[in-house]
Image 1 (cartoon, rainbow, N blue to C red):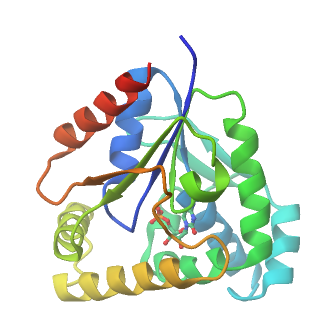
Image 2 (spheres, rainbow, N blue to C red):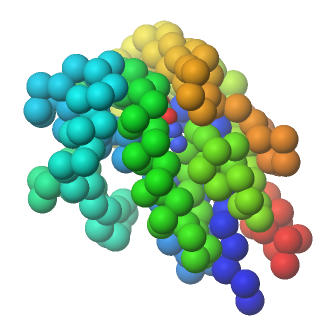
Length: 222
Ligand code: C5P
Protein backbone atom coordinates (compact mmCIF):
# COMPACT_ATOMS: atom_id res chain seq x y z
CA UNK A 1 0.00 0.00 0.00
CA UNK A 2 1.33 3.41 -0.98
CA UNK A 3 2.36 5.65 1.91
CA UNK A 4 0.70 8.99 1.28
CA UNK A 5 1.01 12.54 2.61
CA UNK A 6 -1.89 13.82 4.73
CA UNK A 7 -2.07 17.58 5.36
CA UNK A 8 -4.28 18.89 8.16
CA UNK A 9 -4.62 22.67 8.36
CA UNK A 10 -6.87 25.02 10.26
CA UNK A 11 -7.02 27.81 12.83
CA UNK A 12 -5.75 27.66 16.42
CA UNK A 13 -7.34 25.07 18.72
CA UNK A 14 -9.51 23.42 16.08
CA UNK A 15 -8.25 20.02 17.29
CA UNK A 16 -5.68 19.48 14.54
CA UNK A 17 -2.89 17.96 16.59
CA UNK A 18 -5.14 15.61 18.58
CA UNK A 19 -6.72 14.08 15.49
CA UNK A 20 -3.53 14.20 13.42
CA UNK A 21 -1.79 12.13 16.11
CA UNK A 22 -4.63 9.59 16.19
CA UNK A 23 -4.76 9.29 12.39
CA UNK A 24 -0.97 8.82 12.28
CA UNK A 25 -1.18 6.10 14.92
CA UNK A 26 -3.95 4.23 13.08
CA UNK A 27 -1.96 4.29 9.83
CA UNK A 28 1.43 3.77 11.47
CA UNK A 29 2.60 7.03 9.91
CA UNK A 30 4.93 9.75 11.21
CA UNK A 31 3.20 12.69 12.87
CA UNK A 32 4.70 16.13 12.33
CA UNK A 33 3.49 19.11 14.38
CA UNK A 34 4.71 22.12 12.38
CA UNK A 35 3.28 24.55 14.95
CA UNK A 36 5.77 23.10 17.44
CA UNK A 37 8.60 24.10 15.07
CA UNK A 38 7.39 27.73 15.00
CA UNK A 39 6.93 27.61 18.76
CA UNK A 40 10.44 26.17 19.30
CA UNK A 41 11.86 28.95 17.10
CA UNK A 42 9.99 31.53 19.19
CA UNK A 43 11.35 29.97 22.39
CA UNK A 44 14.90 30.08 20.99
CA UNK A 45 14.47 33.73 19.95
CA UNK A 46 13.45 34.65 23.47
CA UNK A 47 16.32 32.63 24.93
CA UNK A 48 18.89 34.30 22.62
CA UNK A 49 17.40 37.79 22.91
CA UNK A 50 16.41 37.97 19.24
CA UNK A 51 13.43 40.25 18.49
CA UNK A 52 10.32 38.34 17.38
CA UNK A 53 10.06 40.43 14.20
CA UNK A 54 13.74 40.53 13.20
CA UNK A 55 13.56 38.40 10.07
CA UNK A 56 17.28 38.35 9.28
CA UNK A 57 18.38 37.62 12.86
CA UNK A 58 15.74 34.88 13.18
CA UNK A 59 16.92 33.34 9.91
CA UNK A 60 20.50 33.30 11.22
CA UNK A 61 19.37 31.84 14.52
CA UNK A 62 17.60 28.98 12.71
CA UNK A 63 20.86 28.21 10.93
CA UNK A 64 22.55 27.69 14.30
CA UNK A 65 20.05 25.91 16.51
CA UNK A 66 18.88 22.32 16.38
CA UNK A 67 15.19 21.49 16.82
CA UNK A 68 14.46 17.83 17.48
CA UNK A 69 11.33 15.75 18.00
CA UNK A 70 11.57 12.64 20.15
CA UNK A 71 8.63 10.20 20.00
CA UNK A 72 7.07 9.68 23.45
CA UNK A 73 3.69 9.05 25.10
CA UNK A 74 1.36 10.82 25.66
CA UNK A 75 3.04 13.50 23.55
CA UNK A 76 6.27 13.72 21.61
CA UNK A 77 9.06 15.72 23.21
CA UNK A 78 10.52 18.84 21.62
CA UNK A 79 14.17 19.71 22.17
CA UNK A 80 16.10 22.85 21.21
CA UNK A 81 19.85 22.31 21.38
CA UNK A 82 19.35 19.47 23.84
CA UNK A 83 16.99 21.40 26.15
CA UNK A 84 13.53 19.86 26.64
CA UNK A 85 11.13 22.69 25.70
CA UNK A 86 7.98 20.54 25.40
CA UNK A 87 6.18 22.42 28.19
CA UNK A 88 7.82 25.81 27.70
CA UNK A 89 6.63 26.19 24.10
CA UNK A 90 2.97 25.98 25.26
CA UNK A 91 3.20 28.85 27.76
CA UNK A 92 1.28 32.11 27.07
CA UNK A 93 4.40 34.15 26.30
CA UNK A 94 5.25 31.81 23.42
CA UNK A 95 1.63 31.35 22.27
CA UNK A 96 1.08 35.11 22.11
CA UNK A 97 4.29 35.81 20.16
CA UNK A 98 4.55 32.84 17.83
CA UNK A 99 2.43 34.45 15.08
CA UNK A 100 4.90 37.35 14.82
CA UNK A 101 7.82 34.94 14.40
CA UNK A 102 5.82 32.78 11.97
CA UNK A 103 5.14 35.81 9.77
CA UNK A 104 8.86 36.32 8.98
CA UNK A 105 9.79 35.16 5.47
CA UNK A 106 13.20 33.68 6.37
CA UNK A 107 11.66 31.68 9.20
CA UNK A 108 8.97 30.29 6.90
CA UNK A 109 11.49 29.45 4.21
CA UNK A 110 13.78 27.54 6.58
CA UNK A 111 11.03 25.61 8.35
CA UNK A 112 9.11 24.84 5.13
CA UNK A 113 12.27 23.24 3.74
CA UNK A 114 12.66 21.04 6.83
CA UNK A 115 9.02 20.03 6.66
CA UNK A 116 9.31 19.08 2.99
CA UNK A 117 12.37 16.93 3.75
CA UNK A 118 10.50 15.11 6.51
CA UNK A 119 7.55 14.40 4.21
CA UNK A 120 9.35 13.50 1.03
CA UNK A 121 8.89 9.72 1.35
CA UNK A 122 5.22 9.96 2.38
CA UNK A 123 3.76 8.05 5.31
CA UNK A 124 3.23 11.29 7.19
CA UNK A 125 0.44 13.28 8.79
CA UNK A 126 1.48 16.93 9.04
CA UNK A 127 -0.57 19.59 10.76
CA UNK A 128 -0.25 23.37 10.55
CA UNK A 129 -1.61 26.40 8.72
CA UNK A 130 -0.07 26.19 5.24
CA UNK A 131 0.63 22.50 4.71
CA UNK A 132 -1.95 21.85 1.98
CA UNK A 133 -1.45 25.24 0.36
CA UNK A 134 2.34 25.68 0.44
CA UNK A 135 4.43 23.00 2.15
CA UNK A 136 2.90 19.89 0.53
CA UNK A 137 0.83 21.14 -2.43
CA UNK A 138 0.73 17.59 -3.84
CA UNK A 139 -0.45 15.90 -0.63
CA UNK A 140 -2.90 13.13 -1.53
CA UNK A 141 -5.27 14.06 1.31
CA UNK A 142 -5.87 17.63 2.49
CA UNK A 143 -8.16 18.43 5.38
CA UNK A 144 -9.16 21.90 6.57
CA UNK A 145 -10.38 21.63 10.16
CA UNK A 146 -12.51 24.42 11.61
CA UNK A 147 -14.68 25.06 14.68
CA UNK A 148 -16.39 28.15 16.07
CA UNK A 149 -14.28 30.55 18.18
CA UNK A 150 -16.54 29.85 21.21
CA UNK A 151 -16.05 26.11 20.94
CA UNK A 152 -12.30 26.41 20.45
CA UNK A 153 -11.94 28.72 23.44
CA UNK A 154 -13.99 26.30 25.54
CA UNK A 155 -11.77 23.37 24.55
CA UNK A 156 -8.65 25.37 25.42
CA UNK A 157 -10.27 26.42 28.72
CA UNK A 158 -10.90 22.78 29.73
CA UNK A 159 -7.39 21.78 28.68
CA UNK A 160 -5.95 24.65 30.73
CA UNK A 161 -7.99 23.73 33.81
CA UNK A 162 -6.33 20.32 33.84
CA UNK A 163 -2.94 22.01 33.74
CA UNK A 164 -3.92 24.49 36.46
CA UNK A 165 -3.90 27.49 34.08
CA UNK A 166 -6.78 29.81 34.97
CA UNK A 167 -7.11 32.22 32.01
CA UNK A 168 -10.77 33.35 31.78
CA UNK A 169 -12.83 32.06 28.86
CA UNK A 170 -13.40 35.56 27.46
CA UNK A 171 -9.64 36.20 27.36
CA UNK A 172 -9.05 32.90 25.55
CA UNK A 173 -11.69 33.87 22.98
CA UNK A 174 -9.91 37.17 22.36
CA UNK A 175 -6.50 35.46 22.10
CA UNK A 176 -7.80 32.89 19.62
CA UNK A 177 -9.43 35.61 17.51
CA UNK A 178 -6.21 37.64 17.54
CA UNK A 179 -4.10 34.65 16.47
CA UNK A 180 -6.61 33.70 13.73
CA UNK A 181 -6.43 37.24 12.43
CA UNK A 182 -2.62 37.41 12.40
CA UNK A 183 -2.27 33.95 10.85
CA UNK A 184 -4.83 34.71 8.12
CA UNK A 185 -3.53 38.17 7.23
CA UNK A 186 0.23 37.73 7.01
CA UNK A 187 1.88 38.16 3.63
CA UNK A 188 3.76 34.88 3.35
CA UNK A 189 1.73 31.64 3.36
CA UNK A 190 -1.30 32.87 5.28
CA UNK A 191 -3.77 30.44 6.79
CA UNK A 192 -6.09 29.60 3.93
CA UNK A 193 -8.11 26.57 2.85
CA UNK A 194 -6.36 24.98 -0.14
CA UNK A 195 -8.66 24.68 -3.16
CA UNK A 196 -8.56 20.89 -3.03
CA UNK A 197 -8.85 20.59 0.78
CA UNK A 198 -11.91 18.99 2.36
CA UNK A 199 -13.59 21.15 5.01
CA UNK A 200 -14.41 19.39 8.29
CA UNK A 201 -16.30 21.43 10.89
CA UNK A 202 -15.62 19.97 14.34
CA UNK A 203 -17.82 22.35 16.36
CA UNK A 204 -20.31 19.66 17.28
CA UNK A 205 -18.11 16.59 16.83
CA UNK A 206 -16.00 14.80 19.42
CA UNK A 207 -12.45 13.59 18.81
CA UNK A 208 -13.53 10.10 17.77
CA UNK A 209 -16.07 11.43 15.29
CA UNK A 210 -13.51 13.76 13.70
CA UNK A 211 -10.91 10.98 13.50
CA UNK A 212 -13.45 8.60 11.91
CA UNK A 213 -14.43 11.24 9.38
CA UNK A 214 -10.80 11.78 8.36
CA UNK A 215 -10.11 8.03 8.21
CA UNK A 216 -13.10 7.69 5.84
CA UNK A 217 -11.56 10.34 3.57
CA UNK A 218 -8.17 8.59 3.70
CA UNK A 219 -9.68 5.18 2.95
CA UNK A 220 -11.57 6.59 -0.03
CA UNK A 221 -8.21 7.59 -1.47
CA UNK A 222 -6.93 3.98 -1.48
O1 C5P B 1 -0.60 24.84 15.74
P1 C5P B 1 -0.08 25.80 16.79
O2 C5P B 1 -1.18 26.57 17.45
O3 C5P B 1 0.83 25.16 17.76
O4 C5P B 1 0.79 26.83 15.95
C1 C5P B 1 1.40 27.93 16.57
C2 C5P B 1 1.58 29.07 15.58
O5 C5P B 1 2.57 28.73 14.63
C3 C5P B 1 0.37 29.48 14.77
O6 C5P B 1 -0.46 30.40 15.45
C4 C5P B 1 0.99 30.10 13.52
O7 C5P B 1 1.34 31.45 13.77
C5 C5P B 1 2.27 29.31 13.37
N1 C5P B 1 2.19 28.26 12.36
C6 C5P B 1 2.36 28.63 11.04
N2 C5P B 1 2.41 27.68 10.07
C7 C5P B 1 2.26 26.39 10.37
C8 C5P B 1 2.06 25.99 11.71
C9 C5P B 1 2.01 26.96 12.68
O8 C5P B 1 2.48 29.81 10.75
N3 C5P B 1 2.34 25.48 9.40
